[in-house]
Amino acid sequence: MINLFRNRKFQITAVILLFLVIALISIDRFSSVNIIRNIVTAPVNFVQKGINSADEGISRFFNSIRDYKYVSEENEQLIKEINSLKEKNAEVADLEIENKRLKDALLLKDKFSAFNLIGANVLSTNPSNYKYELLIDVGTKDGVRIDDPVVASNNSLFGRVYLANLTTSTVTPITDEYSGISGWMKGEQGGHVTVRGSLELKEFGLCIVENIPKDVEVAIGDIVETSGLGGIYPKGIIVGTIVEVFNEESLSKRYAYLEPMAPIKSLNEVFLLTTEGKN
Image (spheres, one colour):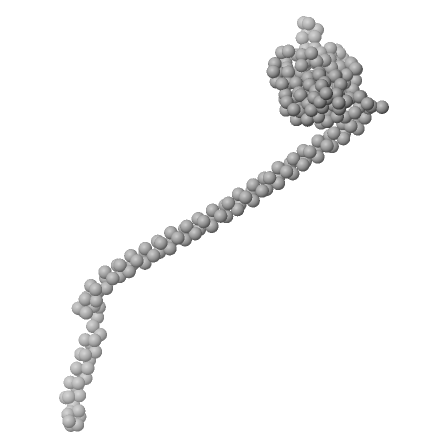
């Protein structure tokens, strides 16, 4: 047996057989073993890829739901914060308006120190026939009298007390056709004029300015204030602004249209100037 392993031909034959075995074991990808393996594993790989794709789709779907929920919650929080800021801004704006109103009221009190200044809330308006009368919440028990001047907080003339009851009063505006004011044109060439309401103009919220002196220049934008004459309105209350000027040479007549400074149609609060009980 030992002689067999020492035989040269046997050794060569053994080496060749060893290489053949190694070759068979290491068959390439085109061998029948690999073909069978591919036939078996291809459907399995297809199913596996489908499962992986489905898993990825499901993951994306739930991630989308999670992201949507997060974004929705974030949007709700932002909306709450915006609404809160709006409320705070509105409160600040209201405080600024109230602060200005109080400052204006103090200026009125200083300007017309010869009068008692009575604040009043507007209860209702009567826009019938474009009169825009106001019903206010003060009356004779508060010292109100007929013909007391009524002004807005910005020192602009609204009108006068037309009727005074115990707890309420009715105020008629300067646009009423029965209203008449002795006015003064402000400016370097100022002069006395007459401001009155007009049946034709009150629908448009305007007054007419008449009796303009020839030596007084009138232009759009000029301011008219009360002159202090006439016995009702004290001097220095702003009546309004000239918005149109007419010169009728054939009639030698000059007149103008005036827009009241006071917001005739939208007042919520007014001030009355009364001498009742004033020493």
